[in-house]
Length: 512
Ligand SMILES: O=C(O)CCC(=O)C(=O)O
Ligand SMILES: [Fe+2]
Image (cartoon, rainbow, N blue to C red; front, side, top):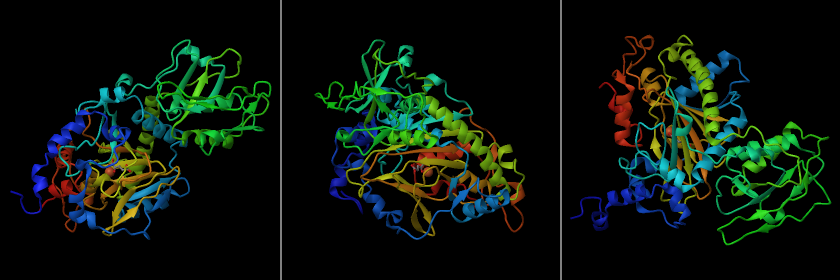
């Protein structure tokens, strides 16, 4: 018999079987999208969440998450702004943070390349084993949560025990012979084509793999001239690559050859010649790079051909190097942020670092595929983060919302900005001075959306056995401790047992 609030159909619906079947595909939500699902499968439908209180919260379009410019403010000013943001919002956007734009862009591009890359590589990494330094899965809380999220995640534990390079996803790599490629062209293909082999006449590599971007910037750096540009109107992509000169003798109208999808299609740009005399300005270099970076499905193809001897591809960086590089910069930023946060709490700048709050670092590299029915699904359910602090890099798509004064407020993408939020353990040790605030990501028809959440926590291998409770300096007769002392591993185990579920974990550890 159907119970209160359930229907007969619910009684016959075996959710667990559907979850297991989805999990067994090892291809995540991206796999559904690739198979052209036109509807959101039932495990992702958040009907029940609509019935739940959080589904009925209104939007506030007037309020704005604070934006703090670290480079443009004096230290005391920055500390005061951070204090206000952490008390009132639990969230702020940070600019002037010193993380190089290229490292951020490359990390996003690398993550996208992984998620859109070889399904077999992804399936090999698909795992729910908490001990693995690098793994891929859809919904870490698939079996614990009420609603599956329209999102896949590559998870890389970077500190304190960094993964061995071979534990991170292998990207296609160029062999030495390709370092002296003679000619290039730009085209697009429908199909991912694997690493090039020695002697291949053409190799196609997704531009979305960041190494191609570096490769592209190397191309540009080594061989540019600003006086000509080549445009490819037939690609229906609104871009042009400037800074190259064509040799009229070899010029050929770019054309696209599309075969039956099994093989390559290519846009020929024969005759592209470097002009060593004129170099592109820094701005133009950036433009050429970002133009290429933002075009989904554009492929850079290298033609291995002896006719030209212009380009030398060096410093090819792989996806994993992009993640290591990004993580290193975020680690440095973490050091600065924990100092500023300590000061904002009225403590010695080294206090939070001495408590080892920044000792562990894990990257959650999210991929939100375009959703055919965004109104029935959710990208990430409402939750607060379990660690001390989160540094989030989001691309330009948007969809992140934060709960402020009981209303959802958008966290709009700001180019170059990082989103910083207080997580539960910092709320706990600050004895509620700072707030860890609920946030969510709505599903969208546009996409994919890429984001990289870097969690500073200490339950990763080797996990900390330290006890964390409200900081002694922050408690007094008027401010008695509000939480029990806990080990982070216990906190996180409880968090994982609930799945993304509002603020239920911190409430559980509150002293009554
Ligand atoms: O993708 C986002 O913007 C947010 C992700 C998030 O909240 C998380 O990973 O905890
Ligand atoms: Fe989060």
